[in-house]
Each structure stands twice: as C-alpha cells, then as structure tokens.
Image (tube, rainbow, N blue to C red):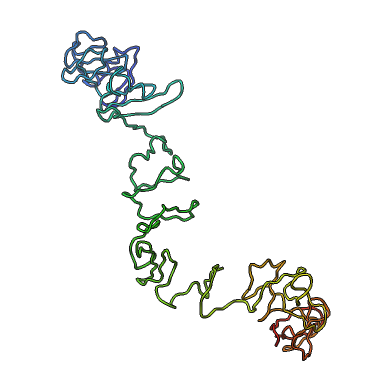
Amino acid sequence: MSTFDFILPPASQTLAVSRSNYNSSLTALIQSYYGTSLPVAADVNREGTTGLVDGMWYRDSANGVVFIRDSNAFKGQSGHVTGNFTRVGIGTRIVSTLAVAATLAGTGHAKFSAIEVGELICTVGNSAGSANNRLYLRTANAVNGIADVSIPPDASIGVAKLNWDDPVPIYQNTTMANIFVKGNLVQNIGNVANQINDVYIGGAFVQPIRAHVGTAAKPSYTFDNDPNTGLFSNAADSIGIATAGVQRALANTSGIYPTSNNAQDLGGLVHKWRGIHAVNFYGTATSALYADLAERFEADSLLEAGDVVMLGGEKEITKTDKESTPEVFGVISASPAYGMNSLGGTDETHPYVALAGKVPVKVVGKVIKGQRLVASSQPGIAIAAETKNIFAVVGRALESSDELGIKKINSVVGKL
C-alpha cells in the first residue's frame, strides 16, 4: 500500500488533493490504484501537454481533474488538453455554481459538455450565497443531463428534493403539519387520466367544492352509474337517488320527485326539517306543533302574548278596556300553528292575533274550567263570566285557577 501521509478512498469517491503539491498528490493517487508497485515514470505526466502517450495519467491542476490519455475517446477541454483524453471517475468537480460548471467547455459548446456521464459536481456557492452546498451528477450525454443527488440533512427534506414535477411514489409515510401548493388555484390533485381512488378527511373543506358549468349532455356533477345505492346518473340531465337497489327519488331540471306516489316522506317524526319555504303548498293533510290559527294585524302599542284585543284604536287593533265589550276580537299569539299574512309586518308592529284554536289568555280573578271568558275593565285582561251575549265571548277556559291576580290560562279562542 501507499506510504504517503494519507489513505485515498476507493475509486469513484470524492478525493481532496493539494493544488500546491499536485505532483505528490498525483503520485499518491496513482499508487492507490497500482498498490505498492508504481508505474514507470513514462506513465505519468504530472502537468503539461507534451510527451503524452496512450494510457498515460495526466492531472489538469487548473480544473482539478485527472485524465488518462485515450486516443479513441477524447473528452478533454478544447484549448487546454491537446486531445484524446478520458477522465478517471475518482473525483468531484468543485465549482461556485452550476452555471459555472455548464460553461467549462468554453463558449459555443453545449451545456456540461466538459463533464463526463457519472461525474459529480459540487457547488459551494459564490459571494452572493447562491447555489450553496449542492451535489449534482452528470446522468446523460444531453444538454441538461444533470440531476441533483444531494442528501438532505437528518430530520429535514430540502426544497430541491421535494420536486412535484417528477413522479413521487405514493406508498410513503410522510408526516408534516401542512402541505401548501406553490401558487393559488394553479395545482390539481390527480387528473383525468390519473385519478385519486378515495379521499378521507376528518375535518372539513374550507373552500366549497366547485364544478364546471354543465350542459344537458354533460351535467356539472357526474356519478358512477351504480343504481344500487346513493346518487347515480339517471339520464343526461337527471340524478337518481337509490337505496338498496330501489330508486327513491329523481332530481332533474324540473324539480325533485319521489319515484312512487305517496310512498316517501320529506323529514319525519324524529328528524325534521327546521323550515320549508315555498310559494304554494298542496296536499291532503297537514299537522302543526302549535294549536291556533292567527293573522297579523297592526297594533297601536307593543302587545304581549295573552293580551285580549279588539278592533279599534289608532291602528287596526288595540287592547280591550271595557268589561264584556262585544268589540272583543281575539288574543295575541306567540307561536301560531298557522300564521296568515306572515309578511305583513313584525311581531312588534303587527303581532299575530289568534282567531281560533288554543292559546294562553291573560285572566284576572278566579276561573273554573269551562267558563266563558270576556273582556274585563283592565286593558287587555279577560275575566270569567256568565253571559248570554255570544259577541262578548273571547273563548272558554281549559283549566281552573283560584289565584285572584293576573295569570295566563290555557283557553280555546272563539265564540263558543
């Protein structure tokens, strides 16, 4: 083995040599290859271009590269090495930037033409600090046959290594807080030819899903044509809704329909829709949570649920203020089962007046279940009374109370 002061790495690995003592460095390099037996002096040309023969070692100290003369494969730098040289792949080009490496062959040459396939290029940066500490490999005899082969430091991935322009194996475990695209609305996940199979998300889509403008021949949303369950394409402009192989509903440009008459519900007893808004309602039966029929009327003061009112005052209705007045009209309702003239105003200006049905009524004094209620002398308050004047009756009590003060009594409103 060599008796020099350093041990060289195996062939094709990076080698640092001294430019100030390149003769001994080249000798050490050759001895590393030949072992203890050094070649004859004629096999080594430590510098210069004279006296070169095929098979001779040659070191170009100006560029830090070792050559072997080979008349059949000249790849040397034009104007510096006279010809017929092949590099030995035992070193790494050290340059400031990759652009510098691309111009080593001189003006007019193709990019990286002075660098062999399989040769490494190390960029160490320049005064501006660009392209620092990257390692590249000449991969092909092409204008840009260069690949970044730098190994990122532990616990990190360099930006240059995470290159989405090239295919990335999908079966990888990648842990990160967030994944961001390079620009807004410029990248896709998958495409028409290469689609993602399933996407599972535990949170929510912050941006709503958008669709392209559809036509009758090509709807905005398309579905796998499986009529067994879920949504499926029923026709060019229709979507079918099926469960267990049975089509339940159909949606198209005309509306949403059940596929059989009087067989499906919209909501149910347990899971109800909060509100349904429409222009017209058609049906044979209906039900409601509350129990009175009411209509909005304009009041001359702010009224409360249970107040007894009559037609009159400065507006349409006002509180009753005479006992057994035949002008009594109804009772203010808080939650009518059916509210007519709903857009006629607000609860403050146009409260609902129960004209029929069951509502709480403000009553003063004792009351017995079944008694008729008429207006009292207190504004907006009823009283239980025996009367033969049906026009004075606002309703009948549905419960009894011995309390003498004002309270609310569940009552049936109407001339009963």
